[in-house]
Structure formats: C-alpha cells, structure tokens
Image 1 (cartoon, rainbow, N blue to C red):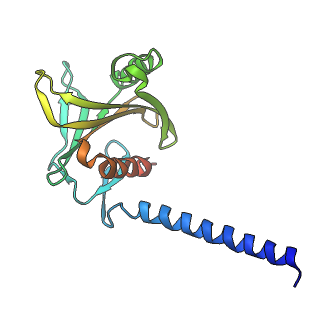
Image 2: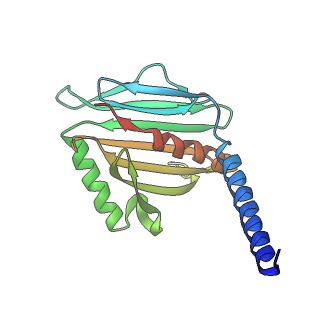
Length: 195
C-alpha cells in the first residue's frame, strides 16, 4: 500500500470513531429522559401530550367560569414531589383565548412583562408558533426569598383553530432545573392536536 492511501484510511477511521463517540454521548444525554411516560388526552378540547410518570396529575381538571357562567379556562396541574416540579397546562377558550395570545405576543415583541431582559424566544409547538419566557424566580409574590430559587418557563401558543390559547407554566428548583427542563421540553415536543 502506498503512504497517501494509508494516511487517508487512518483519517477516515479517525473521523468515524469521533462521529461514533459524539453520537454515543448525545444518545446517553437523551436517555436521561425517564423510560416510562404517561399520555394525557383531552378529547373534549382536542389535545394530547406525554408527561413523565413521576409527575402526578391532579385528579380532575379545573374549569374556570366566565362572568356569564361559560367555561373560560381549563387547567390541568402536575406535580413531582421528589423534584418539586410544578407544571400547569391552561387552555384559555375562545373568544378571550386568542386575545390573550395577541396580548402576550405584543409583550414579547416589545420585550415587556415576562419577556423583559431578552427572556423571550419563539419556537414551534404542534406546528404553530409559540412564544416562550424563561426566568429565575428568587422571590415570591410577597417579596419573600425562595430557597432554592426556581427556574420558570412559560410557553403560549394558539390552538388548532387559532381561537383559544394554551399556556404551559413550568417551575422547578434550580438544583434540578437541567433534568426537569429536559423533561418539560420533551412534553412540548409530544404536544399535538387531535383531528
């Protein structure tokens, strides 16, 4: 064999080994997601998603009524007592749901409210545009210190008909934020509208 051919083969093998090692480390990172996931489906309002089996869903969805007595918002709560994670999935029905999204979009575009200090970003959930705010909470509503501080993520997006808005609120201690946020991102990636 000639020397240039041997050098080429060594380089190809080296690149292949590096590629395999990189993929192996990426696969082990994605394997940090729990092996068992539950499926939440709401046929009445037409959506579904997966969530970790360690996140316990409250027994019943909360239905919040408008002044006229119609259902305005449906809330589903999940908690993880070990990691102290809380997730709220709120569906704000039409006609006010779309208005809420428009308001949040203006806040995002003007970098106000949840989206101040460049805390906002755009993403896609179930094929629709979503806006996301990320923050660290070190004080509660009364001004008291939160120990440890919490990682907070809020994601808003319109429903399939563009009439209602989904608002997902995620909070977890900073000490477990990396693991729990990867679970929340996986939940978002599984969110879909029923046909």
